[in-house]
Length: 151
Image: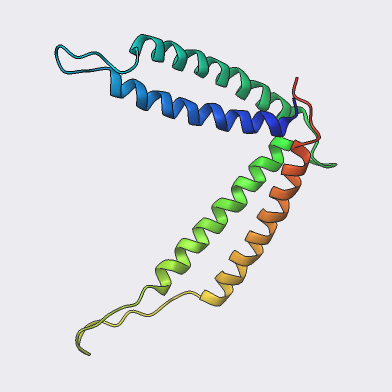
C-alpha cells in the first residue's frame, strides 16, 4: 500500500469512528419497553476494533514519514512540519488583516476614531507568498506520498 492510500484509509477510519460514535450514542438509552435500533455492544466492539486499526495505521504512517527522504535536507516528517508552520503563519496574518479591516462605525464625530497601525498591503503580500509556498510544498508532499510504500 502506498503512503497516500494509507492516508486516505486513515481519513476513512476517522470518519467511520465519528459515525459509529454517533450511532452508539443514539442507541445507549431507549425508552423503557423499547429496543435500540442497533445493538450497542456490537457497535462498541466495532468502534474499539476500528480504533485499534487506526492506531496501527497511524504508527505505520508516522514511521514512514520519519524514514522517508523528502529532499536532500529534509525527511517527509520535516516537510509536514514546515507545511504546518506555513499554514499557521498564513492564518496569523489573515486574522490580523481581517481585524485591521473591520470598519469602525462612529455615531458622532465626538467618538474616538480608530486608525489602522499596520501596512495591510504588505501583510497581504506576505499572505500571498505564504499561500504560494504552502501550495507548492503541499503539492510536492502529495506527489511524494504516492511514491512511498508503507511497510
